[in-house]
Length: 304
Image (cartoon, rainbow, N blue to C red):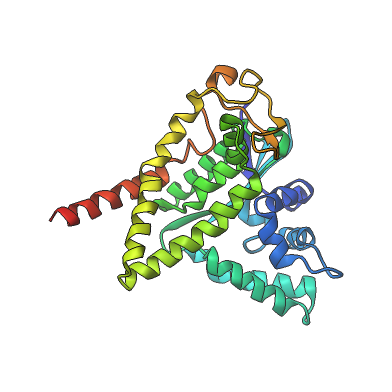
């Protein structure tokens, strides 16, 4: 059954807010959780019902199946940044009060230094969440494509790399790799590597290149080869037979080879599902194109 997408409304709060929270619980808790005052979910609900800004319902799209909201996400461009900042400040002040609000805002600015708002011409996707029971069934990829189409219609030709990572996260890339190769790669490990360590490495590499530090050049090649070449493996993974319960299409929770328990490991082997897909496949080309371009440019300069 196809997914039905529509703009979110205030009436979607009960279903949509937990989905938004699921897109980054660690980051949301770090910024918005204040014991004795409000939880991250409390603030997200307050902001969603307010309607304005980054977290308001007017900035979100929901996906329905059988009349029920099963996925949510948001997308915006750089023109929204000033209005979103003012809306967030107002919502934080209203939710936490004048004594607690400054601390919440400061933590938000710390997160923003790692995950900056969109620059000119960039179509930024965020808050992508899918109902757990439907993950791995194409909802995340369909939602991503729907939001990308909105960006193309608004003349934004470039999407944030977060789009690719979001598709991987929503469809369970880490647990899927765990099942495929009998390794321990949980959702937490995925977020730690790609949402926190990765952006820090990119930022430090850019600074190093500016100051012509040799090690930064080596790291740059590693970064370019990663999206430029390694992303192609997304098109190979659906053809590989998983190491754990390969013929069972349903997700499993099991202990992998190193003794760790990995929950909800989906199976994307085409031999079991009849469907050619693996988390990140739909958006793999987004980082591949600039990665390959950078490799060609660097190789050309070295040859000349």
